[in-house]
Length: 430
Image (cartoon, rainbow, N blue to C red; front, side, top):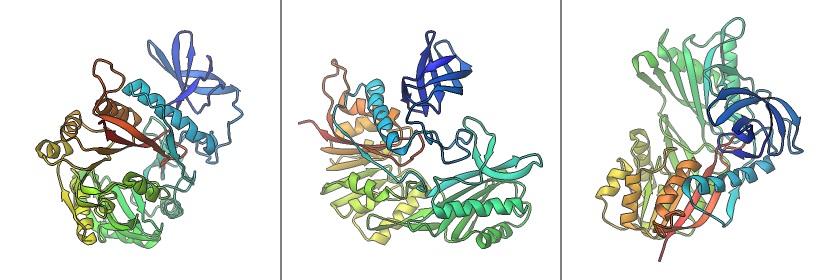
């Protein structure tokens, strides 16, 4: 079928229509006419792949990565970077309107990143590939568990690119275990030190031997956590963490803790979340290792960082102790803590996972009524859903919600992909 692409939608696809069906297809641009080969048919929509670009957009660019459109990591390398942010901005605005019934007519302030070399964390799959069925390293192909072996990845930091090359060489020389399945690497702010997680089905020798090989062959590796999948067994070699300097603070980041992946925008992200906020009490909900907790403690008389994940909570506690600030760590689910909490905070930071904030937690926030909120989200759909609860959306029967949007920011933490990181600042209605 020949389809004219009308717009880009969240998820990396373009949308068009054909004979009463909505058609979704990746790696396209608005106004392009493409021949689509259907791969999935439903009653109201069709998903497909492009077999020919009949009328290319003048914006269409040549992807710099030879693995683009096979590897499942990137979605927008066919779009010049200066055009990616406007498309993401419109997707964010439309998602607010469609899923949250939140009409935001104000500006969406964009924070651009260098388009390549930005990732400080990567996760590589290792599977048999090629005619010889030797293990190779790379990423899964889009929507599958089939390996796309890669020999380069332009979104990686230089140290991660070096780590990927070193692992590829070790595989080519058959020096790594045959049952090695995954390696994850994370670098510090200077892009020198590396934290490594490696998973094997079963150890075919002493785990010390594998750790020694990785420490010797890969520059900058400071700490290694090996997982034996079959026995759910872990072996640690090294301190168990590296330090990341951000916004005037030093954060300990352990093997199982989350940290922001764009090494260029972390400082700007922290400063924008904090803005000019000051006061007596701040709550940092979904605090992680304390990226926002530590700088908040310099602005507020008391700060409580709430984190349910035990590994991240341990890092958060260590970071609070080292900073000697006035912050407190609470290892608890956010909804559970808020249900028991009685004191009204001056400022609340929300940085939830992709699932967003539970309805119960949102209701407790409405009960507490902090005058100002900052909601940082990695998923526009769940953000729109939660904003509807906080602001009332466009439902005339519900009346105006407790909060109104003051600012919307789009941080492009993931250039070349469809992913959107957004920050919404809200203030309580008078």
